[in-house]
Length: 310
Image 1 (cartoon, one colour):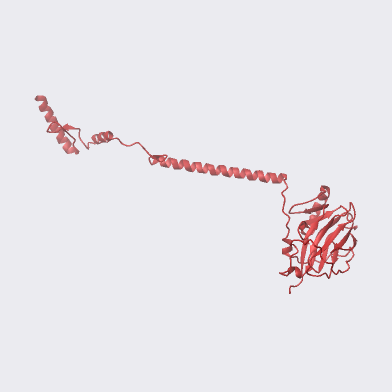
Image 2: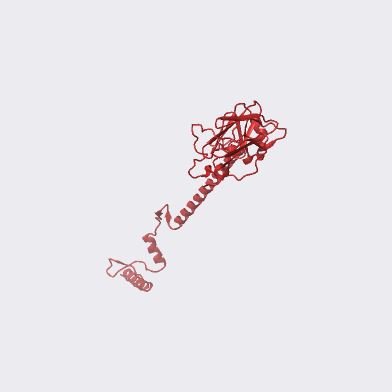
């Protein structure tokens, strides 16, 4: 048997199966998307967000607009705002009108209990509807605390699951306390319920957003240019190294020593002698040693003398 625990349904869960707002509501929070119909009221409420639970609040100044809280549990406390600008509203639980209440007060109370009910059946879904009755006066909802054991049973359908189209049966209700009832002491909240904030964030283009996007583009462009420069430098160094090794663009350097140059170098270094006629007077003799070159040279000189004399 699971013990009873508390969980929270926050106003920022609007448009989820746990909380539904009718047309005519304003929704404002610090982190996330804002939905509102009156920018003047938003400017007045925005500095006060820190006074509300989870730094968010929803409100309406349209008569007939309502908020519907869907929950599983035996007890519920719905919190909102009381003050000079607040008006009257009525509560309906499981299709039964419970009564009319007022949030009008001389002093602002950010932790006002708008409605509470007890001894409900734990297991079926319950529907609490709070409807604004005064045109141009406000009804503000902040959060609801629900006490339940069945909501934490593994086999029990979660509050955040898809809503059934059929209305639940009426439940036994305790008489709601007057609207001036003091707030409950702080209670531990379920992280699983807070994680059900299913409303997607919509980006609002502001000067700061444009600045961030432009700065990011400039950084990406600078990084790309740096990478291109590094690649070009690496390519140039590689091409220079290949040229120094006798290669140009992958082709072997065609500059090679010609045979005639090798012979001239050998003659200059006296590794071979100048060609001289051989004994048969038909072939030329290239001596490859310096001594034989000198001998051959002497013999050649003698033959030249003899040939001259002859």
